[in-house]
Image (cartoon, rainbow, N blue to C red; front, side, top):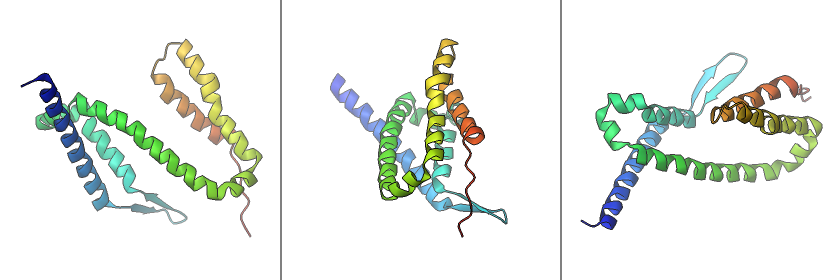
Length: 167
């Protein structure tokens, strides 16, 4: 068997296992559907996508791979690397979809004015201040998660906008 044929066979195995896992996650989250938690004054909807993410996380954890030996053989580091790259491409598609949803509501976004501008400045502060400091102090890859957490905290503390009820 030549080297080219061997690589083609490995690629086929990687694609087959990734597609099988994706189908398994899709079917399971579809069967669960949207779950709603009623709090009386509000309802929290848990969308199926959250379940899909949780299933994907549970299946890719090293604990699952070591405890379920067959799973560790099927879903190797090659499949995990491929899936990691595909997440980036999928997020590009998702971002494009969100951009398409914003355009029809552009007038409403412009009407939000200064509070929205301040919120977006709050999103930039971690990138401009916290990430360089974290890199300087040697946090490495952990800096990204820490700085996104700072972003959420800044938004909730500094730039919270009280909206008046619509009459």
